[in-house]
Image (cartoon, rainbow, N blue to C red; front, side, top):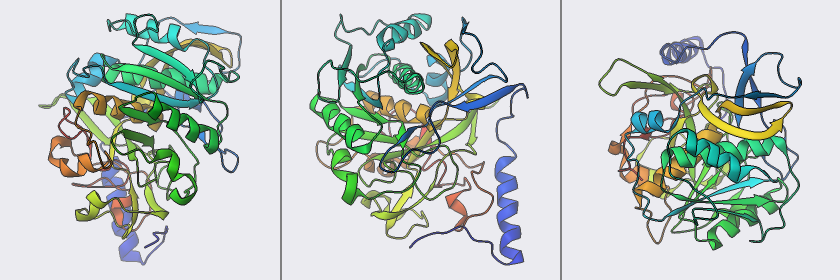
Length: 402
């Protein structure tokens, strides 16, 4: 069925608001008012095109000012993410995670080196065979530079590194943000031997696998896609594809509990039901509220810019470079791709999005927070025990679900 936003009778509305307020009560607190969140890419891509979902925080009034380089990192680093998600430091055994983005980041390899050196990770370079950068055709005719997408690329490379310190990384750059070019880049990533492919971009509206699914249909490869940063909205492609693992987002904070961390649904995490694409078979035993259609998300990881991650990017973006604090589901998708790389359990046939549903008990279930004031059924925008829209089945608790 198609699920729409509705305003029901007084009793139903009261229940919705109660659930919303209960869900948001434990969310991570906002940071100082002088910090502002910005998008790295336009919020309104042209038809047939995608936008990146990276969101970064900066002192209000600094954007567009004379070049400023932040010299020290702020935000979660690899050791904190490994602690929060109980991830081993190594275990990839030579597996490659590919990053697909649009346009060129001319400083990608150098910036990745700075990030990894900062956090004591082993070098990952083209010289030692760990890092590779290609255009969408597999060559070195790189597209034009785009500073917003360059920040996205740095985020993606750094988050794969944080989640999977010994994964090899291939960056595939599409010549534009059209789905034709991004899709060609995804196919190139598969040709390059990727074990997992991360896509931190989306259309902001739903689309059909009949139109674009051939690009993302790769049995035996873990393809992840960000659900977007616009909250409960009904879908973003390619996260709404039946062939990918749709990755939502959380707010992540240190806590005085047995885990040492707490998580709630991030208010910006995209969720909803696809209008066009079929539910993935593995989700049939879970109440997504989407009937025969695809529900989003499947799993999640930290995405709230207010509890963001540290990223290094020396390509100036509106006068700023150096260390950024970044979030958005652009952060959670490469984290999950890295966890797939660590897990090493992707089936040689079929789609990797089945694995979390087959191993839901091996995830941290996120049960508080919301990404919408009103939705029906409630789980599409309110975190709860079990599956919900903003966080899916939950976040990594080791690699057992991947």
